[in-house]
Length: 197
Image (cartoon, rainbow, N blue to C red):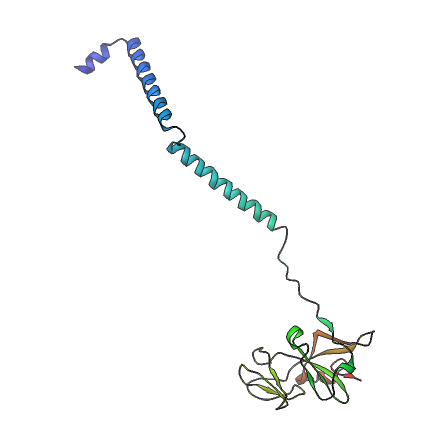
């Protein structure tokens, strides 16, 4: 019966009543906003959260684009270095002066000088020079090498590598770690593996 009465009601009166209800609802919302003061609505919170996520993503993307303009390059020190004058080295002794910085031993004999790379040929550990025993001894697995660099004990498969040793224009010893001489290939007799003084 209420349905029938609503259908009989004048459409203009129905529109006016709906408009009045909408205005009351708007007033109610305005009063609620005024009571909340500075608080945000749920829509404001989610909107600002979404914009902050977008801004963070855009910032990270921009940083990545700028970072890609500067590639990561490992700058290695030069492979050659000057080791001083031949007279700085005592005959018959192993100089450990460049072992820490350059990983090189310089050995002077009566005939001249040679440089050994301070890297065990087994697994790459740095051997120690034992003056009392007159040998190089690897602390990792016990490989032993004579003063010449030839292996005689332990698991090392081959002798230590010699490095190119020459005289620079100013008379100093010049060692090039990029050029290695292998005993098993007969390269220790080549020029550069030994510097005659």
